[in-house]
Amino acid sequence: MQHIAIREAVAQLRAEPHPPVSGHRQVTLVKRGPFTLMLFLFEPGGSLKEHSAEGEVSIQVLSGRLEVTVDDQAYRMGAGELISLAPGQPHAVRGLEASEMLLTVCQTQT
Image 1 (cartoon, rainbow, N blue to C red):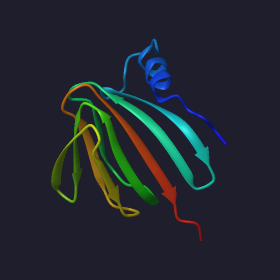
Image 2 (cartoon, helix red, strand yellow):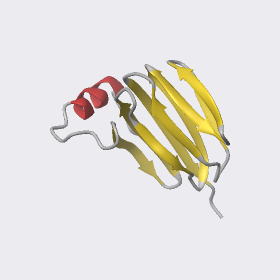
Image 3 (cartoon, rainbow, N blue to C red):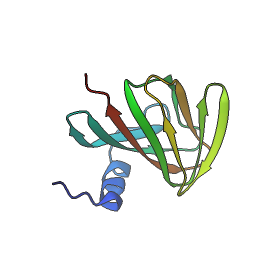
């Protein structure tokens, strides 16, 4: 069992002394077996270039607005919205404004 105070994690991430990389900061909140949960903070225009993961992915917007591009289709998402991706599905993320995002990856076990 692990209890996470997301608002506290956001505050700690925001307070990091180093500058953001590509306009975003990130921290892994949980890494257990095939399950990973990460918190991202995006500045306006901050981005993750196109990439893919070897498992099921969900992207949940906690605050702000993000543009998630999947298969050349851009989805503009706001707080409370979630997108689910199949394993290996290429995607990119861009902050349309200051935003917070939870990323969940559950890798397929063979």
